[in-house]
Amino acid sequence: MVRYLLGRILGMLVVFIAVSIIAFLLMHSVPGGPFDEEKSPLPPAARANILRKYGLDRPLYEQYLRYMWSALHGDFGTSFQSPTESVIQLIGRTWPVSIQLGGLAILLAFTLGPLFGILAAVKQNTWIDYLVTFMSTLGLTAPSFVVALWLLLLFAVRLRWLPTGGWPNGATGDWKTVIMPTVALSLGPLGIVARYTRSSLVEVIHSDYIRTARAKGLAEYVVIMRHALKNALIPLITIFGPQIPNLITGTIFVEVTFRVPGLGKFFVSSIYLRDYPMIMATMLLVAMLWSFTYLLSDILYTLVDPRVRLYGD
Image (spheres, rainbow, N blue to C red):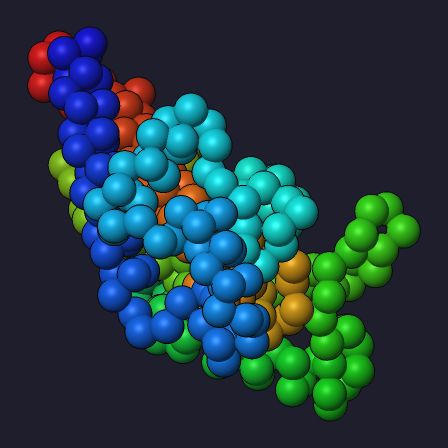
């Protein structure tokens, strides 16, 4: 286990460096800059001083090395669009909102998704199975921004049951603003979880040991929940890991559509304004989350199924 973890951590460092280089080069290859005349009509002397202040007058390789050296010491720079705040402060202000939204979406998807998948597998080839399959396919194929627009049109414009957007600020906020972005963000993962649960459970249900358990006279509930479901959980671990960074770092379209002041919405404005420090910090954060969630998924395999052993055990 220790040997495996050390190898994975070394691989994560390589991925981290590769992502930082690619993101840095792509970021600077886009035409324009944060202090161009179109965006900041400044005198040439003032513009030169600003570029010198942020180190943007230096060669690209030197800018990259200086940034990464500072990042390794916990300094991700100052945001260009908010000079009074550091990047860490901005992420600390916007990321908790995305974590709240993503956490609610994960809770909804991984609570209702397995339930619907179990119902579809147990009631295979019935109207329940067909309905769950249809809804899962719809959740998978319909983009989140399209679902968001449907929800806005129906519940905010037509029925006027819910507000069009925003996010509750403290206990006194309107918590109705949470409903639509959570539903829009969770439908895709919910459809994935339901389909994986159904397909895995259908395969397990037809296994020999399940037929043996039924032949012993065990109740169907005991057969499904105690024997079949445990082996059907392994594919869910595969899809659970990648969903975490996708959801808790903020889905751009959902946050923009519902005016949620999260990290995803702020990342869009950072790209538009060429806020290089904020873009780099966000990309490194996402890369770190993806790496750790895949490592966590591998470890969870061994806990769910004792037959699985990591290399080096």
